[in-house]
Length: 115
Image (cartoon, rainbow, N blue to C red; front, side):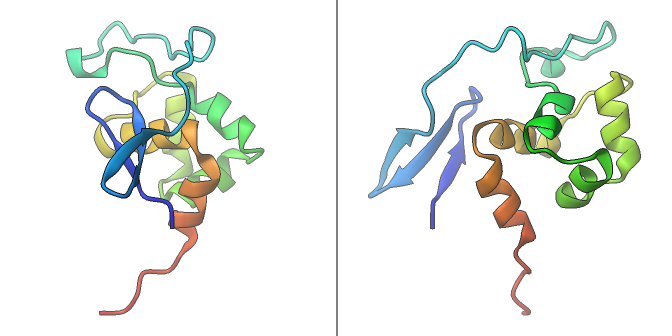
């Protein structure tokens, strides 16, 4: 099983033998950057791949993408139309999806073990 960590600066690293290894080489993302909303708070600025681009790369409809992430389809629509900006855990999840969508979707598809 691959273990990943999201660093505070937005990088994703793989954990192997107690060491961190970059998951993918850093790539400039000017074409994929989301526009900064004029009313965005300081924590919402920065570059995050556009949700629509992530969804299209995964070849999923809005409904399928929302179901896989466990959010309402209206949330996906609002993100794609720029009405809302992903924050907190959703922002982190989208950053991981940008680097390794198959891993994220596989992890989200597994059923949690009963307690």
